[in-house]
Each structure stands twice: as structure tokens, then as C-alpha cells.
Amino acid sequence: MESERLIEIPFDVAPHEHGMRLDMFLSRRMKRMSRTLAAKLVRQGRVRRTPIGVIKASARVYAGDQIIIQRKPLKEAPWEDVVIPIIYEDHRMLGVNKPGSLVVHPTASHYHRTLIRILRSRRQNEALDLAHRIDKETSGLVLVAKDFTTSSHLKKQFAARKVAKSYLAIVRGDPSEDAFPIDAPLRLAESVSNVVMEVTRSDDPKAQPALTEVVVLARAPGIALVEVRPRTGRQHQIRVHLHHVGLPIVGDKLYLGGESFFMDAIVPDFPREIIVDTVGHERQALHAWKAVFCHPESGAKMELSAPLPVDMMELSERLGLSLAHLPDVSGRM
Image 1 (tube, one colour):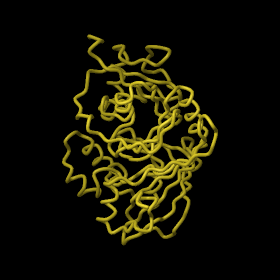
Image 2 (cartoon, helix red, strand yellow):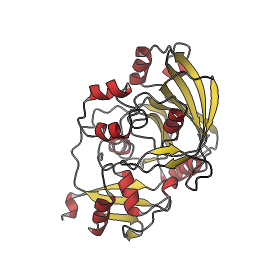
Image 3 (cartoon, helix red, strand yellow):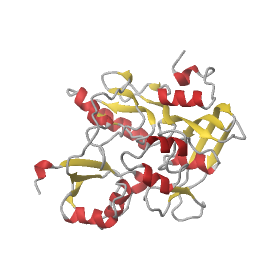
């Protein structure tokens, strides 16, 4: 195999993946990859952990590790036309408004058309690094460091849960209260796709405590716009918690559409109209709205916000949600 013809795709091991077998980690991170295929890639020497090097499929991965997979170049859509609005910038960092359906880091199916690679290609004189990540289908605020020291400082704040984050979600259902907490532990479910999270009992040995605060911002019959403040950082926490209380997020292919539909819908060129007919929107209507944190150099308290993107504004209008009384949501003061 000609290594110079391969590209390298990095995966950072998250805290909830700490202690997982390498083949299990790869199968959960790369949709439609079996543990058998993952083990085969490891045996072929196409997987390594930095800075240790090549490891066995049965080895454990730990939070903070980076797993790198070598694979052939991908066929991707052009990225030159992707618009990434800059919300804030100084000599240490950026705050950007990530478009929906744009991956933040290279993955098994996206390499050049990712937030970090597009930013680096456009700002080649800066050592850019993402301070955190959000899902591909989630739009909104992402903090980007311009140097290693800033990156380390911001990542430590996120890891210590010192960054207060707020999201906006358009949900199906009629919330019975205007503000309420969702305190329900989560666990990784046994599933075909290897990515499903589920609510479980507090005495479950695999239970991960999870708390989410919800505030209703706008209502229409059978629909609502809610602000969501996750107080813990579990995988898919917002989506699972809202679904658990009967308020699934519009456009959520996995938790609203179901696992079988999700597995079909992630196939390239799956008809957009079927997605919209089934779950109401072509991506999950979830937006990273605000973040409150300490500036990495001055230590001053900062609050950045990203206005709702056009597709969610149009979805709100189509569903009869009036946002006229929420200028800080739309960005229209």
C-alpha cells in the first residue's frame, strides 16, 4: 500500500469513551464500520495512537488520546463556497458561527470539507485549533484558538465544565411548563449504529449522571422554541433528554426518526424530501447559541452568541413560531 496516497484522519478520545477497546471505539466513531473491519485496519498498520504508535485492536483508549486512521482520499463536495461567519476575533482566538451539516474535524467521510481544515486553508499564517466540538448537524458558536497556549487554556475550561453553554432547539410537542430541569442519567445503548444513547436508571452501573435545564422561548400549536442549558456534557444529551420528555427536536434523524431511518438517511444522496417528510427538516434544528467563559489571556469574563441561522429562521416561520420578541435570537436588533 502506498502510504503517500493515504490521508490521515484524527479522532480525539472523549471522556465518555475512556477505557473503551480500540476496535469498539472505531466502530462507534465510523458509522457502518464493524468491529471486525476495525480490527483488520489495526492489523494492517493503518491505525495508531499518538504519541505511542501502532497498537492492538484489544488495546484500551483513554480520554485525551488521539487515534489516527489512514485511508484513501475521499470524494467530497467542493468546500470553497462554504461561508463561515466570524462572530468575534482578537489576537488569541476566534468565535465562529458554524453552518449546519458541516463537520468540525476530519472524519471517515469528510476531510477537506470540515470546519478546521477550511479555516486553516484560509488563514495559513495562524496555528488554528478548535477548543471544543459540536455535532455535524448542529449549527452555531465554536471557539477557535490561534496558538497552543490559548487552545490549552480554553480546552481546560471546557473539560472542567467552566464554560456555560446555551443552545436553541425547535421541538415538537407542547411543553407543560415554561422552565424545567431534566435530570435523567444516560448510557450508551446496544444498537446497530453504535451511537444511540438512552435514559437509564440511576442504579445502572453504566449510568452517567446528566442534567439539562430548559426554558421555553416561543410557542405555537404542537411546536416550541426552547433554550437548553446542559449542565453535564454527555454524548447526545440535549437530543436524548428532550426526546425523553416528549419534546423531540425537529429534524433529528436518530431520536425522532428512529435508528432504522437514521441508518438509511446517512447514506449519501438519500432523498432530501424523504428526510423532510419524515422528521420535518433536513438537519436537526439545534443551534449552539451562547457561551460564557474566561478570556484565555486577560481572564475577563466573556459572553459570545451566534444568531439563529437562516434555515432555522425559515423553519420557525413555516411552523408558525413568532420570534419577533426575541431579537437576540435572530440577531435582528
